[in-house]
Image (cartoon, rainbow, N blue to C red; front, side, top):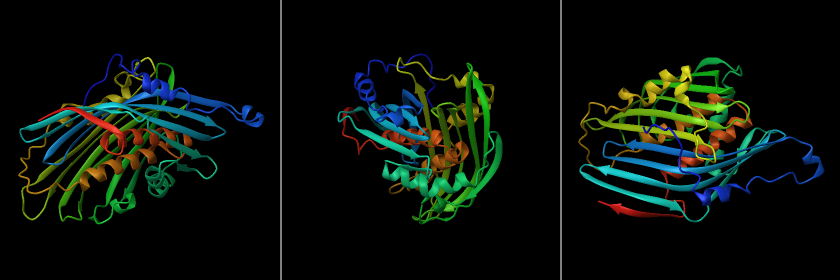
Length: 345
């Protein structure tokens, strides 16, 4: 994946800055006014790369996030910005830019009373029905290491057979530049399952996230999932799902330097190092369309395990939810009022 350093040109994205400025409401009554209000605002660069044995798709997109907290309840607004995409299949390649011209905003609310997420129907359903049970099975201690066992159907993926996996998670407090941070990481050793299309798949993964303990803001997140699928005696098909997200302030400066945190170095090497970037030694000979189940499982498994690791707080539920909405916009620009331009093949 792409490394990040220096400043990002967000300051010039006036549409994002303007959209974020009024989204956090102020207390509406005298009772509300006496309650402390915590507000954060910034921008995120989302980057994803997927490969299904046929085509490689790389997408980057700028996203604005604004968050407010009062009395344990938390709100977040997501504003999509411009991005770029590159697709390559065999010797053919297409590339282009896209931008959100409709000022689309998506909102999230975390209710501290019933500990549920609402706002975006798809994300809320996944968090409340599938991530919630994993959170309940995770330790409450600030520093911990544990194993979660689950199957794809526990993430809402139907039609798969087998797929039992054991994910090792860890949570620890770290510090950087006098800030108190929470580092969450997960490792998924290779496990196997059979997709609805009849492919036998071996899948393994690593992922991590860093959040601010005071505000719950997700400052950095990255993951790498790899898989190999085979069906009907055909040659194996490799899969890859890699993503990273970096938070920036309104001046375009990174909010954190993950390379300066000692505990991050082995994780960075495992997720974004040279070996992680190397292709699997498999030459796919595709026939027909590629089964997308391994990539769908990678996206949901990443969210579920990070939710379990971050724990049951509105801080992290909203922060991670905002990142997921950002990632959804980056991977699936079609639902946005976007235009694709500058394409070439």
